[in-house]
Length: 173
Image 1 (cartoon, rainbow, N blue to C red):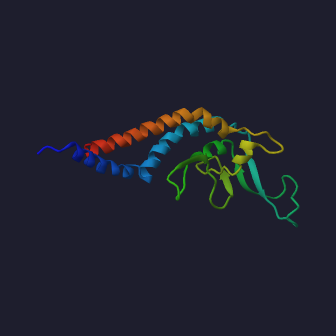
Image 2 (spheres, rainbow, N blue to C red):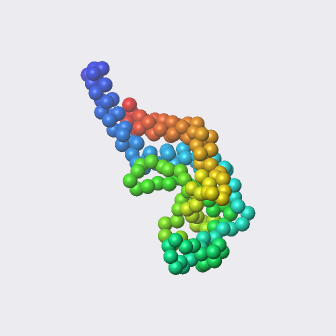
């Protein structure tokens, strides 16, 4: 017995209702992680590296309003050239199914050497992006977004098409 057009449409709708499962958190992140690579590369290319390492100090203070003189205190962290460039990554957070691109900040401790091995800490990224009263900002992320937008959109579209095609082939729609 041949199916009527109405029955075929109902079956197709049932199969298409399963499509949101294909765009699960895991699959969505796979697509977005691949699509984030052009933005990561553009941001990394916009950062100018320093020629020498920089230090972060911890000083004991008599009062919260007073600061120790420059160069005084205990060195708790050394930031080698290229640390900020290496810290730009695709970041995932538990409560979101999206991917965020930006500098990774060290979770614990805050001390040690950053930028030589695999350890990175981009805690000063905002100072480099927007500047301070002593230095003008580099706007590495603000310049990277428009430069990489088209490439990111194309990768998201192609990744989504692949997910949909796999769904169609698997369910024989």
